[in-house]
Image (cartoon, rainbow, N blue to C red; front, side, top):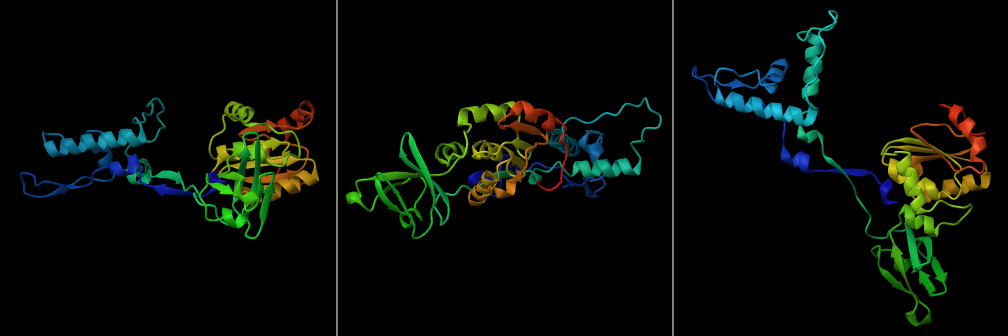
Length: 310
């Protein structure tokens, strides 16, 4: 699925602004010598508006620009209470090094936008959701030489490959009267077309669960009860690109089936399927076990159990 694809970095509003701490050479002073904007602790003074006093207009402009860039990227200046006599002096070399490292973050080039590169064309072995009618969806992995058959006719996978998602394909039988639409897979469409091994959680309930768990990208989540994997895909989309889902299932057959589906759907790097009957709580926990009340005590005390599957 597209949400599991690697992100690419592109220029955005921040990077195109080219905002950074200025270190350009200033015009000559009355003495005739050029001088540069300091980049160390003196640069911090300039960024705070204290570097150029005495009416130098260019220096004042540079100080104001640096102060604005620093406030934009680093936030308001941090103030340390002076009540503790053992607190480090601002002139301490280590403090100057930390401040210099902090000032390096005030550079728009460090903040490109992360974008997904969605797939528009159906490639071999890609997952395709097949829209037959409003209440009938199926799926197929576009494999050369294979045929998808339903009541509307026979549809060769070779006709899928190279076509854009959303296109209409006519059958090779029945005079081409039958047709289907080929849709790009999403967790919602997958929930409506996947093979049911258990009862599933549909898209509206899945949205509420993700919201109540306050899930966000790069979270670590435990799920007790993999089942058909419907809820798992909704969680995976939310915690991508670098999150991790640990989903636990006590039925060995469902474990193997889920692992194969995650692999085929291109999301296996975001999920570990465990053949166990317990769940550990991380950033969030979703319990879809048959007896949730009995699973709750074990889930709350499981902790960071890294032992192999049992």
